[in-house]
Image 1 (cartoon, rainbow, N blue to C red):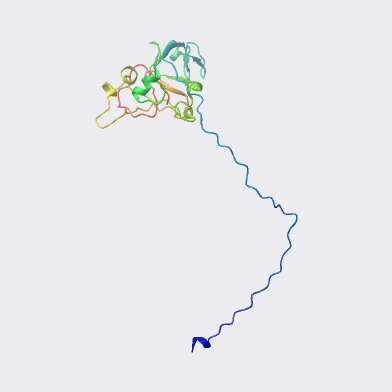
Image 2 (cartoon, helix red, strand yellow):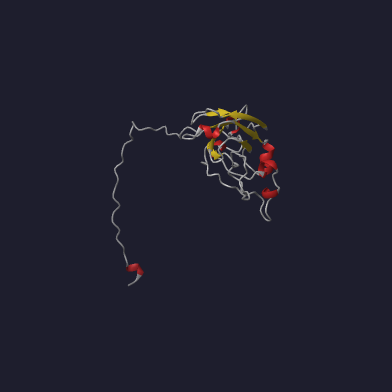
Amino acid sequence: MNREETQLELPDIPGTDPIGQDETAESNLTTADEVPVAPYEPQAITPWQEDSGTADLTGLEPGATVPVADLPVALGVPEGGDPAALAGQWNVALAAPEASQDAGVAGLIMQVTPPATADPEADVALSVDTTAFADLYGPQAADRFGLMLLPECVYTASGTGDCAPEAGDGGTETMSAGAPARTPSSRCPARWSCCPRRTRPPAAPPPRTSRPAVS
């Protein structure tokens, strides 16, 4: 069969009936209004100041706290705690922001010293007012603050003794206090050190004074 003799019959293309324009339809189509994007500008970036103060927890009801002088710190008796176990003058020494930088800690480092009559096994409630420096470590940094335990040398002599970096390690190990991680208000043992959560420091026996910090 020759190609010239082959014929292919195609069906007729069906016709179309034009449809009139819908005069009621929306004809002025536009894009949605542009949503303005405001650049992030941190507001609360005023660092705390090195200072110290005392708070008397004598006669404090469970669940109540008292401010520690002019520090952004408050101490109190936890819910269900025994006020008699915490009675007396508590001292809080807040390290300067430079001390946190030297120790590689993204947050406050503080030394909490209980009175000699306090029960060493009792818990004390600690809260930190982060209003002034909530954005100091990034957007909504205060929402990520928590309490952690660090050796005493983090406060007294960072980079030496148990806080000296190990060979090949540029940071410090961290001892966990078992305190809730995303809250600026937590409980910590009265005789341990509490410090921030982001660094990694060498394990060391807990000191007899507390070193709470937030990160």
